[in-house]
Length: 413
Image (cartoon, rainbow, N blue to C red; front, side, top):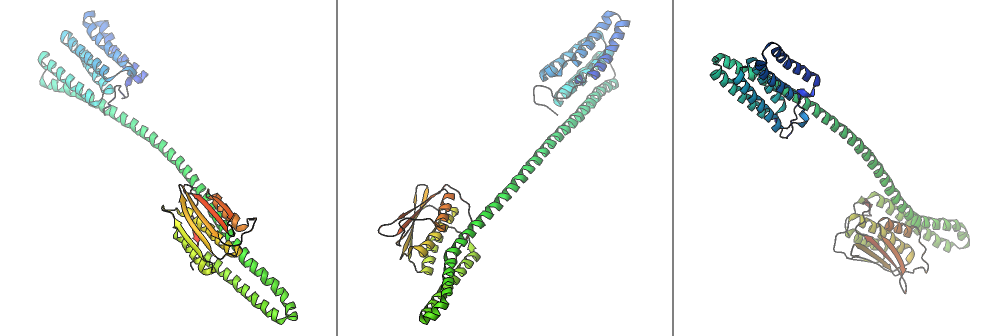
């Protein structure tokens, strides 16, 4: 495996000091023997070669670069060939060549170390054949020995690199697994929080809808039933005093009871049918249905060119529903109008009636609910009387504010 960096990354025997010391002693032992038993001029060249090899062995790999390693290996082999040609040194030369091949194999990429081994083997084979006059068989044996040394060391280095790579990948996978577990825990926690928030939002939506229906029942059915109870309590006395007045009161109670029954059916029908509000036509349909059911003419007009988001339509729908109901019950109006327009980033809805407005407007349940919807949507609601008579309700909602999109119950009739 080849490393493209300037500094060798392969494991080195010099990093293992006890092993390095042992190899140094093995290299130094024959040199000491030669210096003790051979003349100095015969033992000195081999001793210098071995000392050079020992220096390479202890050379720190932290300051080595590929160019420095290759240069030192080339100088060593040239030095060895020169000493071989000048002084013989057959035994020392074999040791030096074997060491240089081992050293280069551990410190250079495969392409460099293989090229170095091939060149060294070719030069050594030529010297053996032409200078030393060795036979072809010994030449082949020597070359195969160098090749075997290289292949053995290359295989050892490859296995070690593979093992280190597996260990590194295992550590990376372990870290990735821990990160995934942490991300899963955080995601699960966020999922639970989202579920809890959704449940709270749903409960709030249900509570809000129930509050509106409760207000409808209180304002219409409750008032009607109170009137029925009062008149029924007075009916026995009216029968004794004036049978004709009692009959009229009974017919009146019957009409009120029928009206209450119709209100109950409307509420139940409204709760049973639902679909998603989407578009201004829902507001127009609400105005039309209100006119048809209550006999109060309601005109509708819109001057909006951009599409209105469903969440804003929802808020406008609920406010219009409450406003028309209040007009029908309290204003004693003969007509009403609804007008929608836009102003920069705002949607404006103006609701007018020609009824009898109070001089001091006291907000009840309906007006309070409408103002609460406006505040929740980031908008405003203003109420002002119209001279000579009537009331104007102005709702202004920002387009940029995102409110909760909800399913709205609409009377399909």
